[in-house]
Length: 211
Ligand SMILES: [Zn+2]
Image (cartoon, rainbow, N blue to C red; front, side, top):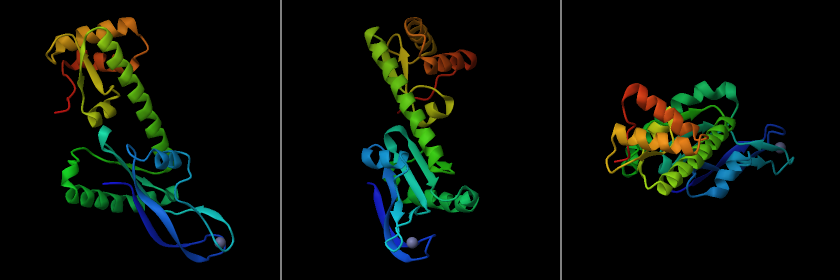
């Protein structure tokens, strides 16, 4: 499923002119970096009235989808006070999407966001997670440790990186703790790894890996 563009009639809030406009309804965050940037920059679905030249946002829901990191977000692009009204529709849209596109294997929960600002914060956090995860993987490789890929949707809600280092072949508590302690000794700025290590020590439970 690629990014999707739609077309429909809109009303200018300034002069009330009615005209047809194109707008994006689904953005593939992993494939269309220009659209992703436009979305973060607040330029997506900004339309200009052909009659009076007024710029305004086409108020609608945009779906942001990056299956590589199990991120699916329904983002309301209109006024925040209208969000609660829209949420029920978003939930229906999600059920439709999930049932019609079983090949995508969406076995994680979507996010329902009030605004593009919330999505922007979320994407920035994803970039931070990705960077920390890459540092964990690179430092693990330098130490001849393997890494286990974690289920991104689970890692995200716990504040964990996308990889868990292991000293040895098996994904066990002892191997994970040993490798993590060693990496943290070498780089104390890996706070997501620290969060994960603390949580694993506390619960004696390893985070779910990608199957
Ligand atoms: Zn107008």
